[in-house]
Length: 138
Image (cartoon, rainbow, N blue to C red; front, side, top):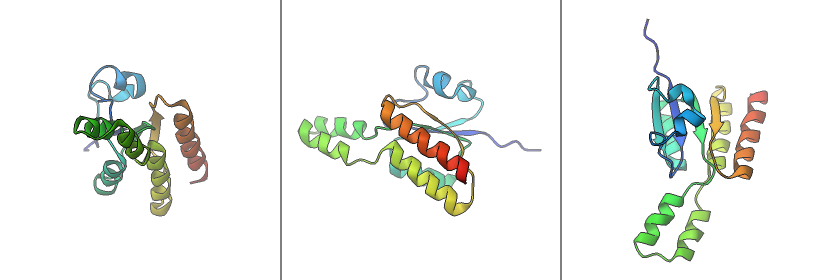
């Protein structure tokens, strides 16, 4: 009998899950290569992965996305002020979580296991609250 390889979808624009102890701290079951870790950095990559590769077994969310884009823009000559403005317009991990809830409702599938590794305490709590509430009602 074939056993499906477990998948963790790691949503973060900056933190590489394969460097440092990120996996050990937030998804220890994936820290020793016992599953596939897919790193997505923004809303579009998150949505496309789920739509085209299927629902992962677990998702770890960062809230604040777009820092990587802002840094690149500043390096390319955009003013810091303009880069900050564009970063604010970038969809967040909370936007990803809202999309996930709608996707799960529309497709009649459960919310997968999840964790939140965001350094933004308010954003992290908003993601947890949304997903925990959705899990109760789906």
